[in-house]
Length: 284
Image 1 (cartoon, one colour):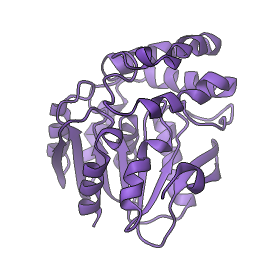
Image 2 (image 1 turned 90 degrees about the vertical axis):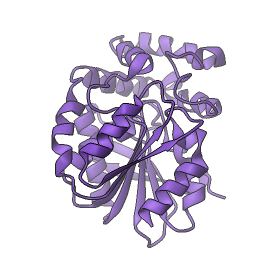
Image 3 (image 1 turned 45 degrees about the vertical axis):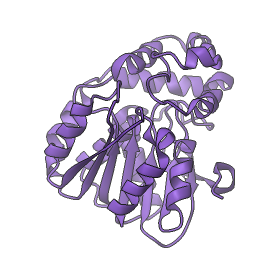
């Protein structure tokens, strides 16, 4: 059985120590990126389905659910985190990677794709920010605005998410997942308990909020990404507009669209078996 505890590793990168889930093996890697206030456990059920045929690697990016603080001068803007992903692929010497991103992890994946990183052989974009949808909906707007608070007040704001009824509100995780409340409760622990993580989260949110058009600029470069791309979208997504999934699939030269029913944005939590099937067939 794949568990986060038994497969977590660490690597020193320029920004600091990154923890990542890695199932190991010699097969081409599937690298899975999560979003704001999410750790690698977003992908636990997907990894359990894929691990027999694929090496699965899921870094916990420094976006508020990480447990080890970054260097004080680390660039935690979206572009900086995308460069950190590229450095991560380089340091692990990965080739022909299937890069998968959900929620803000999909936005970071688009930035990596736009940079034409040759280590990426194909990509899967799963219900994510795109075009002008940043911050995304009520959920994203609330989180990004909270980053304008000083770290101590940001921590007080986040303390409210200890209560399940608050976590299930549309301004929190309520419109992101139908079935993943236990995961969301786990993800917020570092930012509640560690002042250094609150500092990182505020820096990251302020940097993202200062440049809300970064995905529009990335979209201008995506048609140059000439490798296969699967766009997977929750059919009834209320945070990431389904028409953005269709636009992404049409924009990319080798893009195609698959829709998933009975799921919100966090498809890896709501429909992990179906998502795993789609990734496995695509990465085949």
